Image (cartoon, rainbow, N blue to C red; front, top):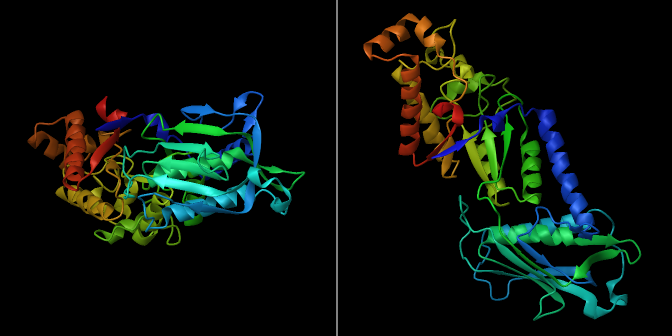
Amino acid sequence: MWVLGVTERRVMGAFWVLNLVLFLVQVVGIKGAHGIGEHGVRIWPMPLSVSHSHKSLYVGKDFKIMSQGSKYKDASGILKDGFSRFLAVVKGAHVVDGDTSKLDQSRVLQGLNVFISSTKDELQYGIDESYKLLVPSPDKPTYAHLEAQTVYGALHGLQTLSQLCQFNFSSRVIEILMTPWIINDQPRFSFRGLLIDTSRHYQPLPIIKNVIDSMAYAKLNVLHWHIVDTQSFPLEIPSYPKLWDGAYSTSERYTMADAAEIVSYAQKRGINVLAELDVPGHALSWGKGYPSLWPSKDCQEPLDVSNEFTFKVIDGILSDFSKVFKYKFVHLGGDEVNTSCWTLTPHVSKWLKEHSMNESQAYQYFVLQAQKIALLHGYEIVNWYGSYE
């Protein structure tokens, strides 16, 4: 069971998220524009090991991808799409209109050979994201060589290659300085995440996709989607459709198909989606559609611990989650719970006495019940550390 710090979830409004996205893009842009500098290698993040020399190569106009000897067949198009994004990044900053045929052809890279050992593209926690990048290949000097255990390691290698490329204003072609490069890399942490909070600040799908793209540039691999909270419940839950009544408006909602699109979009970029359902606090919006989830009309948080319907709804939500959110973890929140509503509400207070529980014990009971439900749906559980204080 994972426990993450509560500070991770502090205010991440639309302005903050968009500025972070811009920051990541700028960082990657800076690294891509200066593959090497007076202060050393500028690859983001710094690889496990790097060696380089002093020669320059140029990227051919028809730079292509090969998969000679690779076991991965790319049936889902993950590698193909990743290579297209690589070309867009490399060629996107300027019009590349130089004539490489006028250059020394021994210094012009014609393409990249990618060798992937695994035949599968399942994305889960702990998957091998390592890669080795050789520019140029010792065996085929007019090609670069990228090898990885999985396609997701290869995607990281493409990001690194893009950061070695820069536009040469004299020749007007893409140049790679300081070759040959030998880069061996693997992430230090298996969980490298960014949180977005769509319950407090609704984000349209294109904005979420932009965030995912920026995460991929920086080699992050978990989008922590804090979907619902006190302020709004924007996600469709087919098992309990009135939960949608808790959205800010009818136009600030996500269908389950929207959620599946986000998961698929992220997966193709090597990013898992960690869905968060924060209970029993942070759940006032739930009662807009199902008022019986509130302890009372005047006391609306936390969720009613004495009502079995509360846990049926949690079960329905997690059942629907399991059809879309395939990451092995689910986040159940559990922090910042003011349990005074339970003792101030007569029927809940009566239930506490009948079960010989005080507020703290009832809170523990609620957290454990939610965890049991999540386990039954095949999830491993993450809670904020406040649940364990």
